[in-house]
Amino acid sequence: MRMRRTRAAVVAAFLLLPLAPSHGVETPTPSPSPSPSIFRTPMEQYKYEKDLYLLELKSYNIKVQQINQNFKIAIDKANFDYRNSRDKFSAKTVLRSATATAIALRDEAISELGEKPTPPVEPAKGSRLAPTKETKRPRK
Image 1 (cartoon, rainbow, N blue to C red):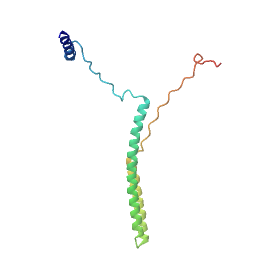
Image 2: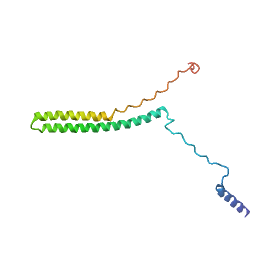
Image 3: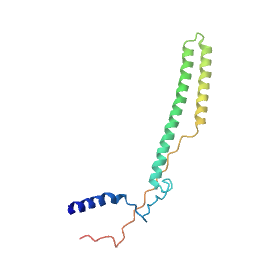
Image 4: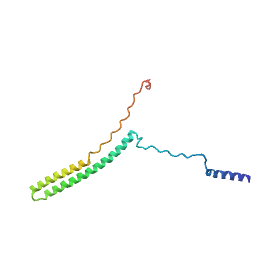
């Protein structure tokens, strides 16, 4: 009987032990981590700039494609009107002026886009040091 009580007391102590408050133990507060943009290595910075460049280049190319598509539509319409005209002489003049206008509009739209994005410069690789005489081992 005494053995049972001892066993029950030990089991109860182990079950209630985690519930006891820990006095004097402070929980560490997390310190703010440094921002990742400040401590980037040159290669990480290059990869970030390259990804940004690729996005800008894709956006630029999409805009140029839209401009070229509008240009092609204008030229195709002018050619269609020329081919279906009865008076070829005056239609040829209209075709030339429509072509010149389409070219001017296309050039203006592309110049408004600005320059094509420039790719980032890859960081220089670290130079390797030549081995010194102490580090060289003689061949046997």
